[in-house]
Image (cartoon, rainbow, N blue to C red; front, side):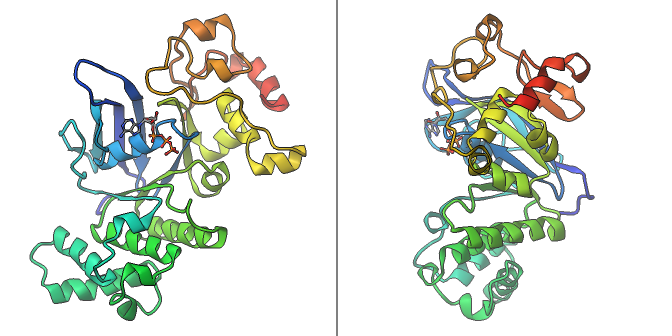
Length: 339
Ligand SMILES: Nc1ncnc2c1ncn2[C@@H]1O[C@H](COP(=O)(O)OP(=O)(O)OP(=O)(O)O)[C@@H](O)[C@H]1O
């Protein structure tokens, strides 16, 4: 929390997650690397099954049972986080918020006590009374009205959006540098969603929180995030500033995802859906993982596994058909004409 503005607070280096089975290595997430700066919101997008949640959980040190961190490292505030290969001990400095706050809240404990408990975990010497008082301040910070009164209530007395605010309060009570939010607003209706996203925006501005926002919603991340990470079949296929990725997407997958959005359907007069599905664990073959669904597929795509290369500073892409800008006349034409 004492770090300077713009300083890198989260570094993810070649993180690889595999099924946790003896004598077998089935990768679910392969060599994912990225960094997030203080006060920055970075979006991670991709279809269901592309590895977003596992990557997010590896960052937080909260991998589910059945999988393991096979390789790679996570650094928070310049310190190596969790040497535990199972990555099941929550990393210091990171908090995680999930889609369904009800499963993370204790239904039989007053909301204020749950926040106070998080405060006492961070500062074990704090008295119950002080922690309760501070909990009310934290509830106020997440914009819960009448916080002292609400602190005495139970989770069932809160609406979905308010529960999510409570979860965020519990998360920031740890004073993390990094907040990993996995589909935090997916279960909420649009206006409530906007309120929760506005709150995350304010927290990153006021507290300098670095936010990794996992979402399948391209419009949402496009509106809220500084940079985007696009996942496909367990690996990053494109990353860059939001404006570059969405205005001039390089990877055919990103262009196809854009064509699947309701916004595109309105403009095009019909909904497009990307044929086929994300390969599951064990189905990944040599060559480009997206090849089977790609309109640009050539023999090279089936033979060569493309590397994630810089197309321009900070804009990386994994596709044999995308070269450097000066060589890439094909891409200009494709970008104009869609996928
Ligand atoms: N605990 C687990 N045990 C075994 N396989 C898993 C486990 N969790 C996820 N997987 C598999 O890992 C792959 C990536 O899953 P992940 O949940 O990270 O994808 P996702 O992009 O977050 O999808 P969604 O948007 O549906 O949550 C999938 O093939 C999934 O079936």
